[in-house]
Amino acid sequence: MKDRLLELLKRLVPGGSVVQRTVKSGVWVSATKISLRASQLLMLVILARLLAPRDFGLMGIALLTLSATRRFTDIGINAALIQDKKDNVDEYLNTTWSLEIGRGLLLFAFLFVSAPTIASVFGEPDAAPILRVLGLIPVLYGLRNPAVVYFQKDLTFHKDFVYQSSGGLVQFVVGVGYALYSPTVWALVFASVAKTATLFVLSYALHGYRPWPTFEVAIAKKLIHYGKWITASSLVGFLYSEGDDAFVGWFLSATSLGFYQYAYQLADTPASEVSGVISKITFPAYSKLQSDLGELRSALLQTTRLTAFVTFPIAFGIALVAPSFVPAVLGEEWRPMIRTMQILTMYGLLHSITRNFGAVWKALGRPDYVAKLGFLRVCCIAILIWPATARWGIEGTALVVVGVYLFPMLPIDVYLAADIVEGRSAQLYAEYLYPFIAASVMFVTLRSAANAVDVSPLVEFAVLVPSGAIIYFAVAYLLEWQFDWGIKQNLRTISDGLR
Image (cartoon, rainbow, N blue to C red; front, top):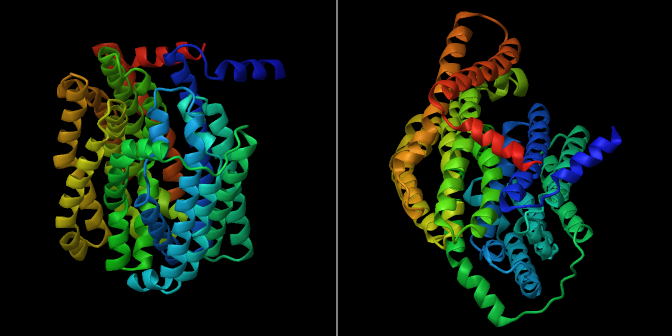
């Protein structure tokens, strides 16, 4: 048994062709994401029973501020190193390390000094000390070993699995352990700091490179030149991915923010996990295929098909079980977020099926598309978010976020993704059709059955999850058999890549 396990692990170490390395890396990235999400969600579920929604809102205000400062100073160094055609980028790492350390110290100083002012803007003075402690995170991040970029650049995600999952485990243990001792917002704070500290230590344990504080102007200019659009997209990315959170926290209350952010975290699972896995491994793979447009177009269609196949049932499934999951698992006090959670599952779906496009644009030297499209989306949301939130609360905010993504963003994203690989928009839309049909049949069938039967939320949730999986895969099988959808070939390619 032990020998078989060792042989399996040996086979999963990324190697072989680009396709084989990408598939094997996908296994490790999936394992990383699953372990992180499982530990994070389990921690949040436990803490939802111990802490109040306002505690999550206070932490949300602090994390929003931290995210804003980090994004507004993101110069895209890691993306530049991954995209660089050289396999060995050691010559850049010392300058990278110096830049990141300087950035971390600058952010800590800013957060420490401005914490009271920022807290007063949100009308929550209790957020100030939280902000000051979380200021340690960018310092620790800046001090980590810059050579961890090789985990992605070389598609050696088995090392990244150990690196990331260990941090997630420490976050879970510290968060839950402290909450059991003292059920306050500080359980969330100390958990986040402990995770970053663990990653700092492991970055040196898992890679032999040892940085030295040197700074070469020519190298810095080269990195920053590539990263300028990454910086712009990071700035815009904060506004469209977290600007709604900031508005809710400012316009409504910390409690409303707690409901909204928690609903978002649960609803956005398809985008943050499945498409995150695919995007993370396809950016390096696309970068290696950038000289062969035909191969790149084929890879884009196949990854779109696979992403849609997995994310449609997850998104529809979350919307299906939300009314039973929230009271049964989180508790009755979280009921106000059910409708918002259901609405945001559609955002998670739309985000998921288009997120992979960014990897193609970056690989083909057009990272500016991410920034420009993000700016358009921010403008659309800015026009609508105030009146919608004032009228319908956090449900109105969610409707705006989903509505803007549905139109005009989805048609534009699809057109540009198809155009850059010299394909057609219809090819990408076709990849969404079959999973949409299968997921819709699953949702309508089970929602009708749930409405017709009166059972406890816990029983309903326990029955809906396996039933949904069975119905979706049964319909998907029939569609593949009848119309030669292509997903069977995708799954066979993944299986062959593991050999």
